[in-house]
Length: 464
Ligand code: ATP
Ligand code: MG
Image 1 (cartoon, protein in one colour):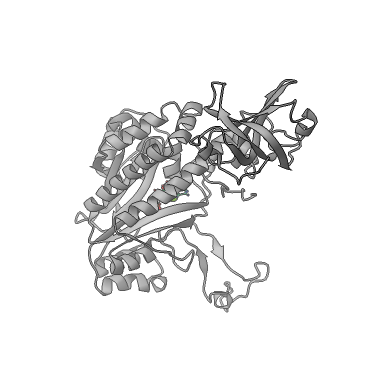
Image 2 (tube, rainbow, N blue to C red; image 1 turned 60 degrees about the vertical axis):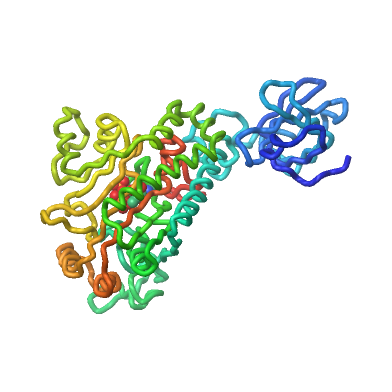
């Protein structure tokens, strides 16, 4: 039999029957009897397997011994309409070549129906499951859609540094970057570690946000966005926090807080609509297997306006709700996920944008309101997730920004360059950060952030 070049399984479902094809992929299951064997093969191009039908009179059973779950194969055969109800087409095998075997006694994914917890322990193999195949394809589609959206809107993609000498939030827990010998670091006269002898000649860390550098570029190019890895050494073992995650940070000159909210809402709706249109099979699988309301929730977000109100109004609603929260609410506290979800899921039953937060709980760069108590922050709150976006209109006034930096006792000498944007050609501007994995939690319906990134980094876990 002549061996045509490899065709992806997703293409087979659109191909004409009666032709000889070659597919390559991994065995999901094998069953059958003395006359006939059925192999379900998947190559990652779609959630659907192709059924390979083997006539044991033509290919001896002996040859199929190593065709076990997890093995990698080449199959060449004739594509025919399927008689079974499970699939439109199948392959009548002419030739089977085993590329790599997978020992049935030791292959961890031998059986179906593993828990997500178990799969985290075999994160090196979980892309082979239907669930992670679906999640990773959706993750790709969302990344692509993000670039597409901003490109269409005339934003420029900016690469901000991962190694930084500043702390964007003023207080975020950061990972140190150093080449000093941690057992014998050089000391200065005061007995502290002498970072002048370190690689960069000063103390450096992994970035917690690309925003500050993003602002510099927005104040030159107009509209920019960053999309890169972000690191936070927060020891919060929650289902919504990673130590290494990806963040999308648009930053726009001449945008006020309300332009900023309009963009955030339009952007998220575009992404959800894109997923519904381009990831229909994978979303249907996740909807059927994990969360029967997923598709409905995604449609819902596309079709409703986000509720906009101030933090103060939000706190009032929570206080009057009569609801018992694990963390009590009062004006001035940072809202917990349970509070955010109450507003979204119980009170408004739609996404919510809260604005004008107390300045004590928000970062130094946010525009100060005239009341002297609040800043022009905005958090976008989503069902099931809580905060998905954090953003603000930025303080463009040099003196006000400087006063706040001093109030917060921040190290001014690592921020002089940032202050320069307010010294030279300052203007109103705004931006926000969308956590890529939080978006994926929403779009996939997964409930643990460890399940929407291929290799999660969390406290005490960096094995794979
Ligand atoms: P949270 O209160 O949930 O910790 P945050 O206020 O620290 O969030 P920001 O600093 O505003 O978050 O970051 C912007 C966005 O980045 C958040 O809205 C969220 O989507 C995402 N994000 C923040 N921290 C993490 C994390 N540790 N893991 C994953 N995503 C995160
Ligand atoms: Mg945080």
